[in-house]
Amino acid sequence: MNVANWLHATAHRHPTAPALLTGETLHADYLGFARRAASLARCLTEAHGLRRGDRVAVFAHNSVEYLEVLYAAWWAGAVVVPINHKLHPTEAAWIADHAEARLMLTDSGERFAAGTLPAGCTELALLGEGYAQMAGAHAELSPPQLVAPDDLAWLFYTSGTTGRPKGVMLSHANLTAMTTCYPVDVDPVSPADAALYAAPMSHGAGLYNFIHVRCGARHVVPPSRGFDADEILALAPRLREVSMFAAPTMVKRLVDAARRSGSTGEGIKSIIYGGGPMYLADIQAALAVLGPRFIQIYGQGESPMTITALGRREIADRDHPDWERRLLSVGMAQTCVDVRVVDVALNPLPAGATGEIVVRGAAVMRGYWRNEAATAQALSDGWLRTGDIGHLSEDGLLTLTDRSKDVIISGGSNIYPREVEEVLALHAGVAEVSVVGAPEPEWGEIVVAFVVPRAPGAVDAAALDQWCRQHIASFKKPKQYHFCDELPKNSYGKILKTELRKRLPA
Image 1: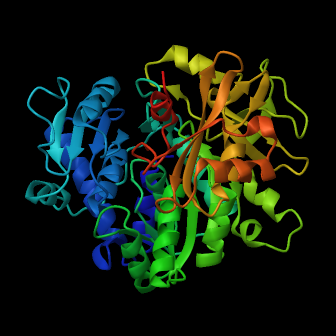
Image 2: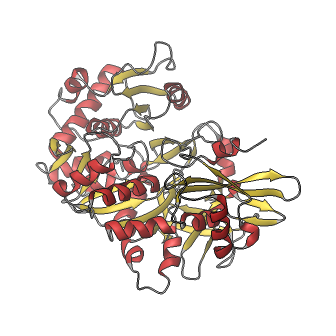
Image 3: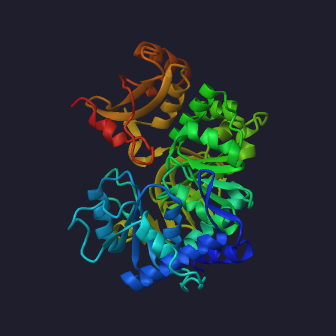
């Protein structure tokens, strides 16, 4: 059940198949990839005492070495703790302490000042001569450590926008369920494919490595080691059959770059988007510029990448009578989960009724690391309470409205910010928008919109008022507009509504 067995098997089946590339430069074939992971595992075990169940934190930019270290940890039966490289070292040190990590891998091996990391946690360099010696120290390909299906494999810390992050415990069985859903519900994979890691490997992009390892596909880290829209559009035609995970903000930047350069996305096979709302206007624009390359997934760290999916055909089929309704949804339940919409007492609601989304199945987390109270709050009789609000149609399409904490109650009526955002995003002068509630004595809350104009002076409050009157009920219309140069986002590109609320007048 060890996920490292997939690399071990692929190395035997397709030893000379290209595996790891930086841009177009080959770093290792599959046999080399597996040997380097096995060698690293042996060195970490012998020199640093790594044992089954120990936690290995990785706090680094994307690189081919990042994948080697992940598989080295699993090869040894250890648990990986991927930490977004954009976090402050103080935040990363807190995660290492909470996870009780034995090792911390960073690019230079010198990211933390002496005494910053918890006692017993050793920082090692992911790049450089020392790492290269460990990766090449042993040529034999010993099999990975035997582990149980419920053994931890991936300890993912949530973004922590409302407090300290929680450690989501994902087992080898959880990751197996997620991986087997991908070719059925998201996108078939072949050895000719190239998984491009432009989004952080510590998150969704990294989770999609498994199916590509299992199928013997290529793994490509852009030379920039991050997201650069122009770089991707230039690289894709040379690589061919490129698949990538992207947050909606990344998709928008890719579309804008393609418009500027006249690119149609040649070489890109699939763009899987998720991690935040993709507004109707944005996905329609993306289809117009880049064509039928888009697939939507909805998931959470607690059910990684595996709640619902909306396939390429459904997104691209403009002739379908319910095309726009489909685009506004996040698709249907993936194969390995059940999805319900429930009321406050967790009773299932009928089709069309709005309530909290809950999910259960083989991909759902074991719980939160060292946090029994949060686990009990999140899991009820096997159902994960997502905290998201939405509704299911008769034909099984799930539509998200908002996070439960973001619903605005004004004059006793529920207003879902996403509904208002969808309308404002359709205006030609609006580049980005986010809607929050502000306290108000008479109404309880009022609707406030933060708007990034497409160009200076492209739109004003009066124009947006008129636009809203044409498209939504009057009580949903924003009472205030705040125009800004950009919206605050976390390290994964999600808009931080908590920060926007701080900008509201006292």
